[in-house]
Length: 103
Image 1: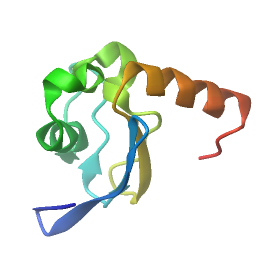
Image 2 (image 1 turned 90 degrees about the vertical axis):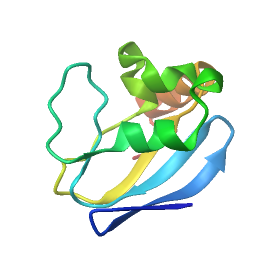
Image 3 (image 1 turned 180 degrees about the vertical axis):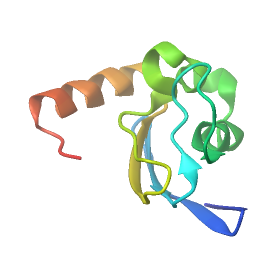
Image 4 (image 1 turned 45 degrees about the vertical axis):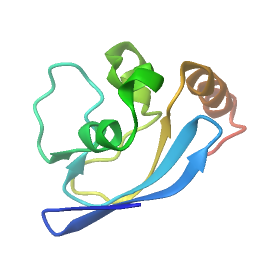
């Protein structure tokens, strides 16, 4: 899946098991914090537009970073891991915290 906006592409490289792996281009912001001012194109809005919110409540829950497990600076590009369920968030968070999953 590709989204065109401002001459940049966001690609979903993997979808399954309660998570997404996104290829974030430069100038997109991992906007996972409530009330944060956007410096770039908001990535959370892209994810919410791609997935039905009623099935993926974590995507609007700022206590769980809207499902984002890490961030990249706006000028940076790279892979972003997003949990699409609370169960996947906890599972992936434990893997990150114990070093079983390396960013």
